[in-house]
Length: 218
Image (cartoon, rainbow, N blue to C red):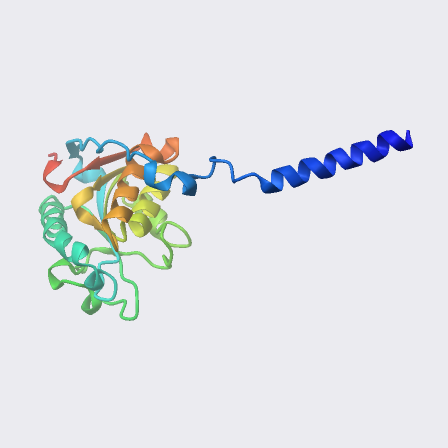
């Protein structure tokens, strides 16, 4: 028995030593990073929204973050077009103002600033603007069932809030030309996560689109 125990111990030590000498198995995505094939381009779908039950979310368009991202500045005309369409159809518009100057004056473009009857989301310090804020109750109070989500960053405020909306039973519409990030990869990641890569509740209740594909119903 003593001989068997010694043999078993020696075998175990040898096995550990062998494993330690083996190269890392190729089951870690970082070892395959350069060879991973990106997914196909998401199919952008046309959307018609009901102005009575739809709200436009304008998230974090501030000088301090959007102003430092050229791709964000390029989205401003697209968001302005959606904002004009929303206002023309008496839709609710919800805003987050963040950063060192969380006021309308701190926004990247004064054409986007909120009006007196717009809704200012309070307490939303993170990516998901529903968390610890008055957003969910504000939407419910107005009978909102669908949100159009615009903002920066794509992987932060837009991705987080779109997921938050879907998880809470809302439909979400996300125009890719109304979101931005520090670089193109983060935007690509956010778009794919919303389109097909995220949890079922998200991908089944969110529509990836473009601003010119969004129509306002009667």
